[in-house]
Image 1 (cartoon, rainbow, N blue to C red):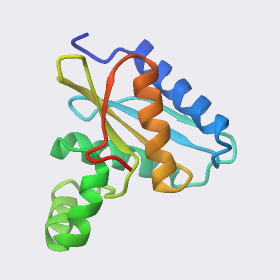
Image 2: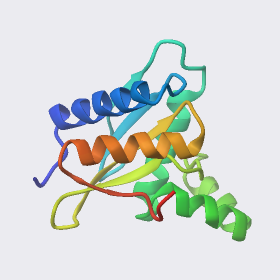
Image 3: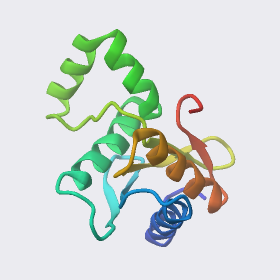
Length: 146
């Protein structure tokens, strides 16, 4: 696979919702972006709160922008807050440095895009993202394991 298609992106979102329902997660919002950071699909479960779409997109966008899972961006935010502030200035506030933004890679390790999830704790968001990616036969790169 050389590109993330709409069909795969929608399947990823469906897999993430199913993973969330399996563990009784709070209502999730799932954003799937291509390797250029463009939104392919966004799904928001009933009951998801107001800013969840922007947060999910920000987690995925940050992962694509820096080429690493948003868990590592969260560590960067703790260790180098000025860097994350500058990054958000450059990205017009688009980076959310919290776990839940996971790179989607093909079997050769090529980045196809990223999935960002928001709704529950960041660890659960990330868990659902990894489950979805692996569920469609692709490789998940969250940066470091939860």
